[in-house]
Image (cartoon, rainbow, N blue to C red; front, side, top):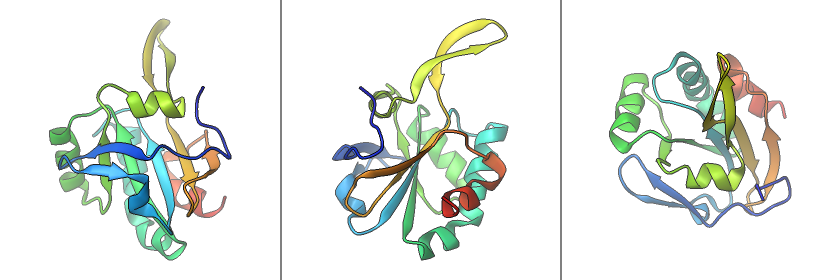
Length: 150
């Protein structure tokens, strides 16, 4: 069953773009905006990442850290971070394990064709590791403000 509001987030979140293990305990005492997105360097995903980059200072003032997750590999994440000067890490989830835990790896339809893909959603996790809110309808161009206004 997918993680819901009120559930504790997993202790191990995965590995970042440099191969470092990312643990929930790395964010102890801070809120975490864990956002899932389909693919590096696509228009919607770039708009979302840049909104979070531009609002990063305000998010940090509000006590948030930001962490992105997609199925892209480490090299793709490194390029995406460098290209857009992102101040936060991205988790490599090529097997969609974390996405399955959070229930964002799902069947999608495009042009009548069904396929498995990542749902664009953000999980707001409190200082104790508990999922506080799930943003299911992400506004890619203004996502930082969307998080701050929840």
